[in-house]
Length: 423
Image (cartoon, rainbow, N blue to C red; front, side, top):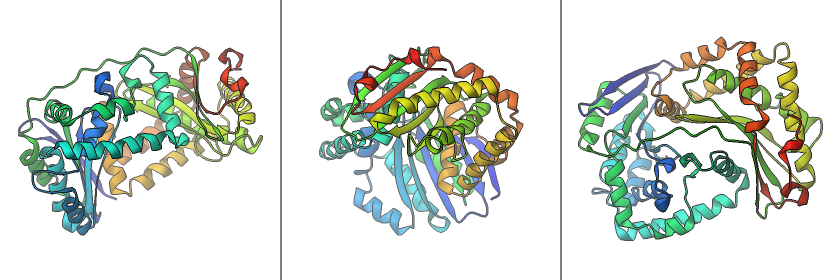
């Protein structure tokens, strides 16, 4: 891979970031809108996600079926996602049909019709999606943990919203939201793979510079949350558990060290938690730790699932593992092994046009600074043992520990007291 990252702006001031790879045989284009569930008024919670769906229904030029035929006929994919801070639309094709990706992405972002019948149809699909999420506890636990960790702050608002509110939204709501949020200064454009940076800037200017004068919603960072334990009942045969702490915002000097801290604790089958909770005690099938970030906050969290009878012992073992690590520190070679594990995942991801585009957009939307693969790897190499231990000492505290449990739950699980944990 021979990626070259550059940053430009259109005449209207829209940022355009490109990651050119002359050896790639595919090209990807993305438009990210700086609006998500944290930017919604509670009365219209879920509107960002519903709008993301509806723009695919019809544009001034294409029906949804025509868009699908154009993209698939070009060997590509047209898709989108909604997060707590960003709604993004992207198209990826083989390099000889990159013009189709550009046209389709521009059309759904700049020219959606948002008609009443289409909104009503898409609401039915979104309501089914919301029901499906609650039926997939291994995914739902991530939403619940964020809801509980950031309780009382807009970051606690999940992307889908509630079925009752989504069911009441109409085309007027969506058109008003689109007109308010979709335009400069909320737009950023990304292009990666086999593409020409100058051509990408020209395309962005022609397609989006007319979308101006839009509201930029102000955000405030969440306060550091206090410790909390939350139980939500469902019908799953397994309890799904999230155990975590608030962590650093993206620009923090120890941010990469906290990534490696999460890796030492719970990335891969050689990690401390996998060995302690699964291999030595057979309490769970899977356990992993991840760092989740927004533009002004972060969370270091371990996720696991177990049967009711194993849940409390699993939680206690995780807490004990945290405590032992903080007291005893890293083993010889442990950090270097974890560095190679994470670097390997980054290198493999960088071989995918879609993943490179996502990482470029994510970096920029989080802290306004794109990073090459080489910069990412260098940042990992620069982390020392003492950096990881400093991060552990600053982040892993009982007074900010938050646990969310989803499952049937026996009495012990429902009434669990955090104060009994050895942390």
